[in-house]
Image (cartoon, rainbow, N blue to C red):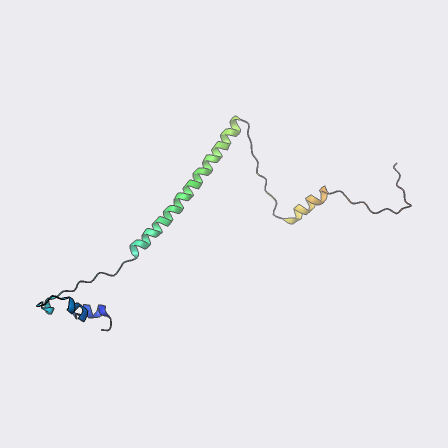
Length: 120
């Protein structure tokens, strides 16, 4: 019995509690009531519930906003002739290089001073 909790469970009264007892009290009839140890299961479950609930609410809001935006675009394109297009850049560098090289002008070779070019 090294810990105070073990001493109290065994029925031993520590000296600091003896000093608090009123004079004339029978120490054999004294009952010491301890506070139960804190249970952390409730606060942990509450925090997890709040976190999961927040994530679910955000996902539902994002889905609803997406559906509303799609329906607005569908209605506007059907009534006003409004349209939209999405341009996605290609992920391969080979396609970008060939597209750029075809747009550039071909460089002419340097001419010698004496050579002339005639048109036919």
